[in-house]
Structures are given as structure tokens and as C-alpha cells.
Image 1 (cartoon, rainbow, N blue to C red):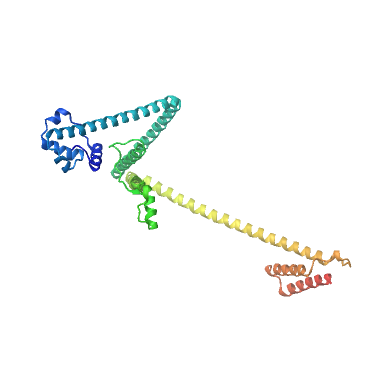
Image 2 (cartoon, rainbow, N blue to C red):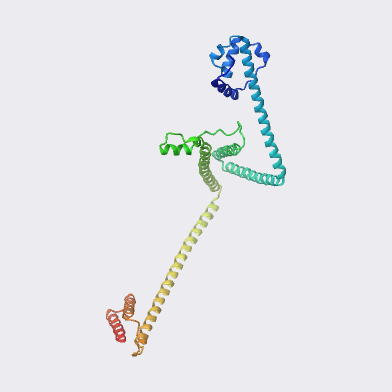
Length: 366
């Protein structure tokens, strides 16, 4: 009558892991009523109503509940021993690693402390200067914006620390991030049209909730920086205009006249500087044009000398002293024609000159 079915055993084992109550003692069980015994067997140990109704005697109920409570106690004890052993092994490994790598850990700790302290000093000095600057400019919006920026940066630090520590520990003080998993295996299975959910790998994914929160913080920080720049720029312009207006009001008539004269002198100096720049640019342009004309003239003289050398070369019957070919002569004639056209030579002289050169070149070839 005390046998437990498979379903009852499964329900009892599942309930044990989720039940946080301490097991009952035999003296406590003996004082319970039959109705309470049945209710505890059904709710806490997975007994079915038919199994409980078969137990007609209260002693059967007491024995069944005492057996289940003792089994829960033994299971809790085994789990506690296993947890203690696991922690002992981890502590031993950590102690051995700390002893072996203590010099490295010490130097790394010193370096991290130095870097962290320097960054903290730089950050605090920067924020102090920004707040002093906003106070000097009389911008309350700037001070408020700096406080909001510090708050956003603190949230970013909290999020980054929570993400790093979440790999090795759990805590209720971590940054609350939404759980938005992306399961590649399930996505590939759904894209291929398979009815399954990706199999065993379909339950594994990447939580992009912290990524989204971090991106929102970075976007908000950028917008705040842009807004702060505009606020401080407008405050600086306003303060500068106020100082200028106050200075004008405190000036005497003589100072105003001197200021006007100095302004006229600066304006005349700027106009003279612009005229000198224009004159220098014109001189450079003229010099460049003269250099280009000189280069063209030298090139024309060189080509005329080459043409005269070609005309005065002696004719011999040997094929080794004959010019290259008719194409070379025609190309030279065309080049000379283009040069004379660019220099505005008279049309009649140009035609006679080119015809004479081409005929001489063809006679030499013949």
C-alpha cells in the first residue's frame, strides 16, 4: 500500500529541488492529523489521491510521510556535501594559482590601481573644469547637462561591470537588462522550412539586451555632448557681447575717438595689404608668361636647326646614310606646320616653308 508510482516519484523529485522548507521530524509528524498528513503527501511529495485513500490507518500515513521526509533530508544532505566539495576544490585551485602567480598578480594589481587612479583623477579634473567654466559663463543649463552626463556615464559603468561579472557570478545588484535572445540554430531551421526548433542547439543563443542598452546609452551621450556644445557656445557669445557692451559704456569720448582712428588705420592697412597681394600676383603672372614665351622660342629655334641639318646632309649612294623613311619626314613636316601656326606666321611663308621642307626630304629619299 506504500508503493509509489513512476509519476509520483518524478513529481516528488521535482518538488524537492524547488521546496525550501525544512524536513519534518518524526515527533512533528506524529502530532499531525490524518487530513494534514494526506494533504502534505499530495502537495509536497507528489502522491495521487488514490494512493492516499488506500492508506486506511493513520500509522500508514505517518510511515509514508516519515519515509518521504527522511528521503528529502538525505537528498539535501548529499547536495550540501556535493556543494561543499565543489567549493573546496575551487578554493584549493584558487589558492594554488594565487601562490604560483602571486608576483604576476601583484604587479598586475599595482598597474591596474595606478591606471585606475590616474583615470579617476583625470575624469574628476575634467568635470571640475567643465563645471567651473559653466559657472563662469553663467549657464545653468550647462551645469544641468553636465549632471545628466555624469549620471549617464555612471549607468554605463554599472552596465559594463554587470556584464563582466555576470560571467563568473550572480547578484541581485546587477544592472537590470532585458532578455532578448537570438538563437541562430532556430533561425536557420525556420528559414530552411524544417518543422523542428533547431534541435538541441536551438536552445542556445546570444542575449542582445545589454547590447541594445549600451547602444542607447552611447547614443544619448552623443546627443548630450552636441547639446552641451551648443549651450556653451551660446553662453560664451552672450557673455562676450555683454563684456563688450559694458566696455563701450565705460569708455570716454577720447577713448571712443582713439578707437575709431585705430579701426580706420586697421582697415587702411588691410586694404594696402590686399593691393600688394594683387600686385605681387600680377608680377608672378607676367614672369610666368615671359618664361613660357621664352621656352616656346627656344623650342622653335631648336626645331629649325634640326631642319637645316637635315637639308644640308650630303647625298650618298650608300643605303646606310639615307633617312629613316617617308613617314618620318612627313611627321617632321606636320610638326613644323603646327609650330608655325601657333606662332602666327604668315600663310604664304608658312606654306612655302613646309612645301620646301617636304620636297627636300622626299628628294633626299629618292
